[in-house]
Length: 388
Length: 139
Image (cartoon, rainbow over all chains, first blue to last red; front, side, top):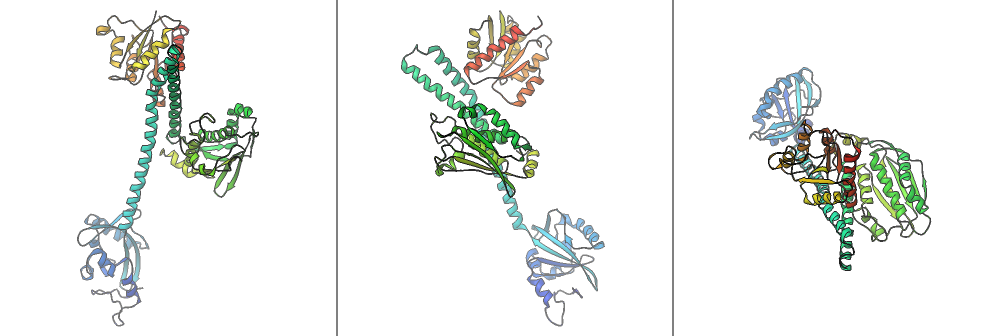
């Protein structure tokens, strides 16, 4: 507590006993301290104020505190100050607004200011603690810029995948159609070589068509995602098992499932996720009767789902690679497909704020795990803002 | 003789449509124009199209040079003399906005060109059968 704020040019509060604890603290403080009287006249500053503003103490004392502000804020500040003095309480200045201070040389810098009233025998005084936040602002701006840049390049990449796959369809349609026409009309009329060449070309075009369609599917996961709703996973699973009825019967597979929870997500995508994982389990079966088990357990804030099988399994060196688009571990004669299924799964799970991975031993089946946040509210809000 | 107008700028698609219609049971005459401006001149028998037949059916691509399919559709459907001719939008687009826009402009139906040749031939023949034998149109 200050009893006698000095009016002279010095910070020495107790002139008889040299600098007291208060001055020592004030001088050593890492922030600028400016103490003003009820009229807004500066009565005391510390060393950091001099450093920060470029004024000497003598130049500041007796001046209105507005000297520390850019000219455009000065009038407003006078009325704010009067208002503060009328009902003084300790608070941060400016609310959420960005505050700026002005150096003697005219340069402005962003600041954070907290205000505290103090009662003295000479009336009310106001302590302003001023912190230079230039560095923090610079970091914030840089981070925001980098985040925006990242978002932009992601979006651009997505756009590229979409446009490329979309526009490639048109010329491909020509190639495919005319190859088919050629094959149909002239098969057996040219020599055996010609028939073979045409067959290879038809086959290549057909594979390219599948790749392009898969690329479109992949880019649609985020492009055409729907808003999140509450989804009963049991219903989704039943729908998937109905869709796969023939494949399941065909493989004589046994499918067992736990009771599954209700989660928040994109229904068609959740369905696709289960469908891809169960189809894979059926596709990569071993000689044994296929057994597929769908389980779930609660792990902290996540649901941990698993789809396990007793199929051919995967060697550990491929655990990561299988989730990359168009990566395949088998030739197309053994197992058909373009290698899109798990890449789409990963994209779907990640869009829902979860993770997906596999645990397996070659020859002893594989179990795919994925997590789903129990509360997906955050993602739901983000999605419904339309920022996809 | 059935008169069909195909508005299509891709010669590959023109030829495929011709192939698809060639062996069909209906006897047809396919006229082809390659952009929207030509399409409107054909329909209004403008200039060297003075003797053009009035089509019984229009197959319209959406993305055309000079005047695109959406504008052609709008003009046809706002023209008292032309608006009753069935217009089938036949395009590579699957975009929801193109579908909605086409129906809003009173397209009679919207079909995405399939990649597969057999499907394409099937569809062209189905269009012809449906619009020219099953549907009752004003004479």
